Image (cartoon, rainbow, N blue to C red; front, side):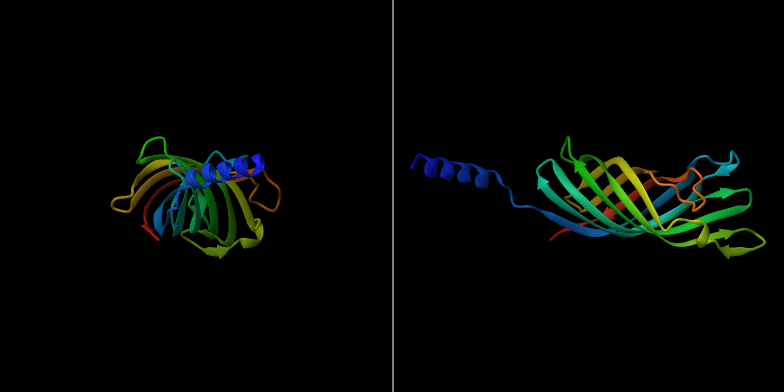
Length: 187
């Protein structure tokens, strides 16, 4: 009999502590400041490009949420007068911690699937997809503000590449700073 009382009290405490989850979804767009990291040529410069897609923020508890994203993201670098422009479908899954109501810090893994790789210069443009691996793994971390009252979220994130991106196994990875804005609404 005491076991059932204990179980009943435990269930009551557990279910009363649960909060209804809030889910927010919406579009996201921003600027990528990309470059290659690792064993790179010293003449390499950063490439400004874009990312665009959608986000879903799932509130787990008051101060923590999980945010999966699906993005079209352009990464690469500039070497001399040649732009190395690589397009990915990226799927970051960020854990977001809110130390105060509108400010968040985030971290999480990202996987990207290469959809095209192009070398562009004044004299020619050609596809170079065969030189790159098709999967890119990374780790993102950043911070931002989330103004839920108006649905606007502004963030700054760095995605550090964890995997070599070239098929020749050179030690070169993607590194991308992202400045983004998202407009979300609650489901």
